[in-house]
Length: 247
Image (cartoon, one colour):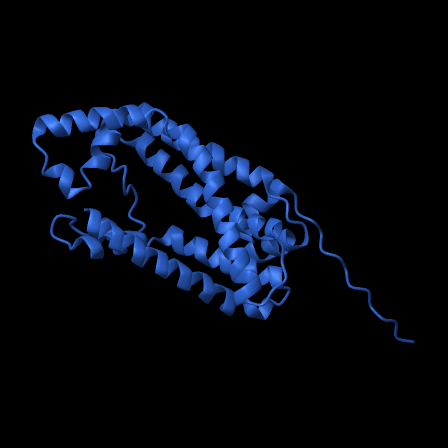
């Protein structure tokens, strides 16, 4: 006599396993997150790495050099007379000593804001009925590629014989802007190309996958992905436009 088979419950993943699983088995990881949305360890790792990266940056590159590179991205700063520019860099350098704390707080704020945005996307655009905590867990884990970017950037800086050659604003060749000449490229195009980053796209894919798992319908990844991708494109167009205006 045939007997009805009982579905085998999925084995829950630990918080530590989920951090690694985002890179090695994202589908299974986000399914686990959808079933049990805990994320505090991942969040803590991102906060510590983000703050630690800027501490490492200031320690090895120097607050003055970080401030100088940051300010020289603007054509307005480049047009200043040397004395005014020097004073501005000195003032900005003092600000960078507090960047580890600022970045740590910013990680919390950014993830909360993104979770609120994607909660709206999930419930009102994609027709889901999910909770803020579940979306926040997805967002926190989907941001892990940005943490990897910080780790790789710190590694590059640590291995450089001349730390002053480190490009703080765009340290790795992970986007199209890295290969463009900023001086000869229109400001909007350069900013847009810089935003087209492999780590950012990786995050977009993970967000789409995570939202699809929250819906409980695995076939809906395409809808979730394109919703997230459209928001990302809107953001980089607006951000690139603002950069071009302020440059």
